[in-house]
Image (tube, rainbow over all chains, first blue to last red; front, side, top):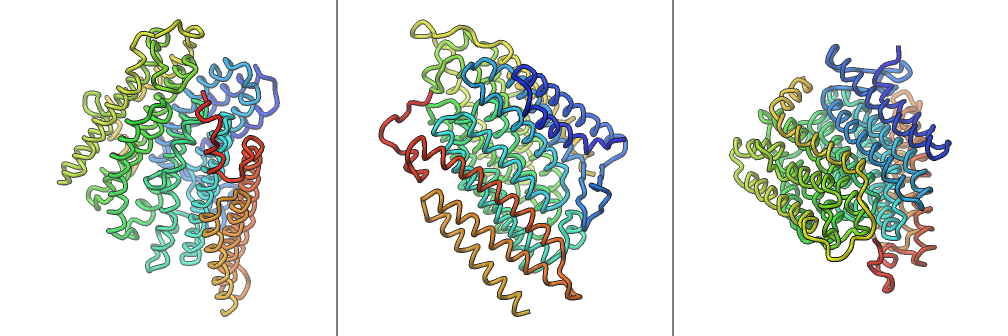
Length: 477
Length: 110
C-alpha cells in the first residue's frame, strides 16, 4: 500500500507534469482533479495521523543520517490542511479566472504546472524533517513562486519578481551556510537527531541565527519585507492569494521547527527580544502603510507585512507559556492564511470587473459583485479580530495579557483597529454609486462564490477557536 | 589541517565578496554572477567540512549537498537571467532601479 505521506507529494507533482501537455479545456480539468486528489491525500494522512499518531517515512528505505525522513506530526498536518483548503479554493477560482481572459492563453497554460509544483513543494516542505531538505524545498517553492509572480506579464511584475528572486536566493545561501555550520558541528542534518545531539557553543548559535535571518526575509519581517508588497500586488489574484497565504507562512513554519522545536535552548534572549520588537514595528508600520495605499492589492500586500508581525510579537514568552505560544501563533497562521487568501480572491473579482486596481475606481462594485465584496468584508473582519471571540487576535491578546505584557496587548489592539480601518478603506468605494455607466457586465459568480466560501471558512475557524486550540495541543504531543 | 583552514578562509572570502557585490552593484548580470560567487563560497566550505572525517576518507554527505546545491544555483541563475533579459527587452534597463523609474509610461498598469 502506498503511504499517504508519499501521496501528498506525488499527486500534485504528477498533476504538474500532466498539465504541461494537453489542450486548454483538458488542462483545467486535470488541474482541478489534481487539486481534489491532493486534498484527498491530505485527508487520508489526517486519518492515519488520528489513528496511529505521528507518521514517519524513510524515502527509499534509507534511514537518517544518510537518508531523508519525512515526518508528519500535528503541526505539519495543520499546515497541510491550510494549504489544501486554500489550494482547492485557488484552483477552483483559477479555473474561472484565467478562462475569462481571452488574451491570457499563455499565462493560463503556465499557471497550472507552476501552481501544482508549488503546492507539491509546500506539502513536501511541511513534512520534511531534514534541514538540507528544507533548504531545497525553500528554493524549490521560491522558483515556482517567482515564476508565478511574473505571470502577470507587466513590467512592474517582472521587476518585482526578479527582486524577490535575488533577495530570497541570497537569504537561501545564508540558510545553507547555517546548515553547513550545523553539519560541521553535529554531523547530521536530521531534525530529530540534531535535537538529540543538542550542540552547544558559538558555532551552532551562529548557524542558527544565520538560518533564522534568512527565514526572516522569506517570511518578510520588517525590515526584510522590501520585496513583498510589489511582488504580491503585481501577480494575478490567485497567485497573490497563494503567495500571501501560504508561501510566507512556509518561512515562519521552518523557524518554528528549527528555533522552537529543534533548538529551544540556542536562541539568546536579547536576540529574541529584537525579533519581538521588529514584530511590533511590522504590526504598526505595516498596518499604517496599508491604510495609506490607494491601490487595493498594494493595501492587502501591506496588510500581510503587518500580519507577519503578530507571529514574532510574542516570541520571547519562555518555557511554561511555550505550548500556548505555539498554539496561538499556529492559530494565527491558519486564520491569516484563510482570510488573506479570501481577501485577495474577493479583491481579484472586483478588480477584474472594475478593470482597475485603484480603490477610487471600485465605485458601484457592491451592486455588481455583492458576494466578492462580502468576502472582502468577512475576511477583513477576521484579520481585525472583529468577530465575536476575536479569533486568533483575541487569543494572542489574552496570551499577552495573561503574562503581563501590556505593551504587546496594546499593540495587538492597535493592529486590530488599524486592520478594521484598512478593510473599511478597501471596501468603502464599492458601496458608493458608480459615477458613469460601468464598463463591462457582471462579475463571474463562480469567482465570487469561491472567495466567499473561503472567507466563510476563515470566519468558521474564528468561531471554533477553543476546538481548534485543543486540536493543536493534541497535535503537539 | 592547514589545507582545510585555507579552504575555509577562501570560502569566507568568496561568500563575503559575493554578498558585498550583490548588495552594492546595481547591474543585474553582475548581481547574478555575484550570487554564484557567494554560493561557490558555501560549496567550498562544504568541501572543507567533507574532508574532516576521522579515518582520512572524505564524508560523502557534504559532497551530495554540493552537487544538489549546484543544481539549485543553475536553476536560480537561469530564471534570474530570463527575467533580466525580459526586463532589458521591455525597458532597455540593466538595473532594477532604472527599469522601475523610467520617466514615460508611469502608472499605465491597469
